[in-house]
Amino acid sequence: MSAYAEIDIAAPRPEVWGILADVASWPTWNPAIRHAVRDEELEVGARFRFSTEIGTLKCRFTAIESPRSLSWKGRVLALGERQAWILESTDSGTHVTVLAEMTGPVSRLMRRRLTERLQAVILSVLQLLRLEAEVRSAETAEEVARAAESLGKGTSP
Image (cartoon, rainbow, N blue to C red; front, side, top):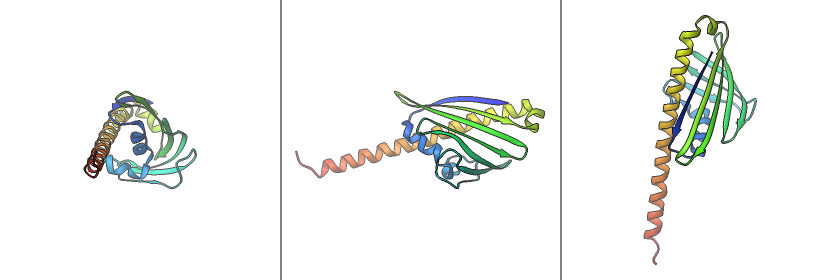
């Protein structure tokens, strides 16, 4: 079973990538994640884990092309999960696409219900990612403007 979603984010791709690739920070912007840890550097094969209401997913990265794409697979209970994230620069920021798949006997038994749940989760995560990236991008823009203003006050024409 699989779910697919996409969203446009008014923030530059490096900003969105930084949020997505920083596994340990996921709980700060996604309230569904209780705890997240990446034990190794961000590279193919690196392991990480995160906890949600259904349990702790133990995962590893399967593909990384910074700052364009990130894929991982993991397991929780009797479910396997794979996610692939693609980030494309646009004139107004970043277009993010995600494909998520669940496998295992439970996913086959409860296919329709879990597919609907997976789709809802993916959409929610994209909305949360957009909010976090746009807030961070706005804060960065404000900091740059303040720095430029303070530089302007200290110089004479």
